[in-house]
Length: 96
Image 1: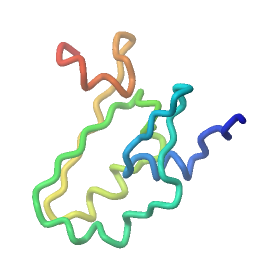
Image 2: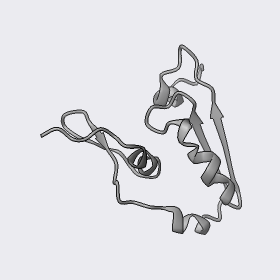
Image 3: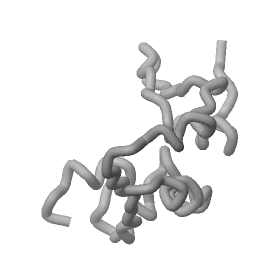
Image 4: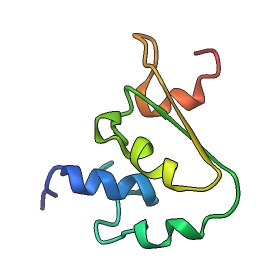
């Protein structure tokens, strides 16, 4: 049975959830999870890093730009992708 393609809402949820890697290699998050009501409880310093070519957490959704400024000690950076960067896995390449 084929699973549906990721929707923009599911992509938003995946940003805040842990991926579950299925045997067939497909990645799905918990589509019903909504962290928004609890975000104000974060009191520690938070640094979020995303990459403009991230295919799992696409920058076009503007998640960091929307959520992180609501946190008292939140800060974020969106690093520009390059032809050599592997999207979501750019964090594994410190040389970039």
